[in-house]
Length: 112
Image 1 (tube, rainbow, N blue to C red):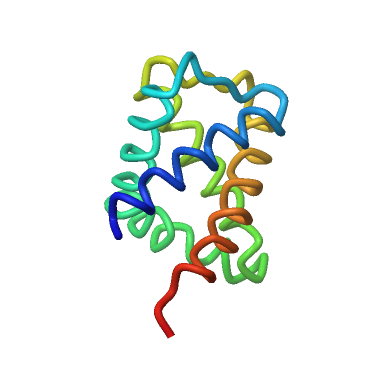
Image 2: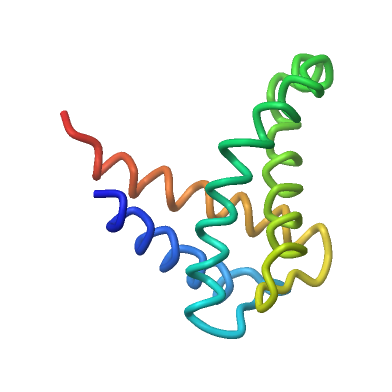
């Protein structure tokens, strides 16, 4: 099941690169590695950043979380060679599209 999610997240990343201008991959392997890096960043660093930005999140009623998601996307592009983002707007919209598509996929993959 983990392998299936990994492959699906990689395919979603490739779709994001196709949909959002400013997001690009040099190949499938770069997308595969980016999928792992994004998973690790979201598991290890994102909770700490969410905790540190809790007052801003409360003031914006959670909308600032989208900015944090964009930051995680941008950070992954700095870590993985072959994953390029031209500017923060591309990272923001790439993260929004990525989150939306993976949310739909996870809904169908959940065991009921």
